Image (cartoon, rainbow, N blue to C red; front, side, top):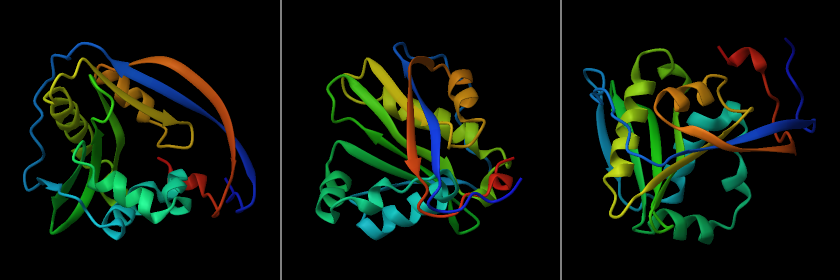
Length: 185
């Protein structure tokens, strides 16, 4: 498959998923040698580094065009938690929990860096994120969304973890950088 050049308009679908009952999660133990740390009020550059490392191939670009003050306000809001998984001395992936809507925790971001995909971390990290979401004060619903530009196994992974799709939306966007479909297993 050939590289799709920047400037190309792509159609894609966003799938919105939810969990309204706490799932009976299997072990959420992370792989041996992996540790999870919360990044408290991370500076914009730290978040954007993780955001790019995980989402570069999946068109995660929206925060780059946002007002830096808006990003700072979001990252320093005590109701937004950023968690980073480390192994071998470097970040393997991260997730972000957004508790700003009463009763709901949105799994705002979740993903692995390309070098960590396929090593057994993804499902364990997702189950850990879900467990932490349900541990939030007064949470009765956990949500997540993904799109057809994300990893091709994302929707399936969310469904096997207990989420169910409740809405789908068709959108389009202009690529800001080339997209190489061969990057997706």
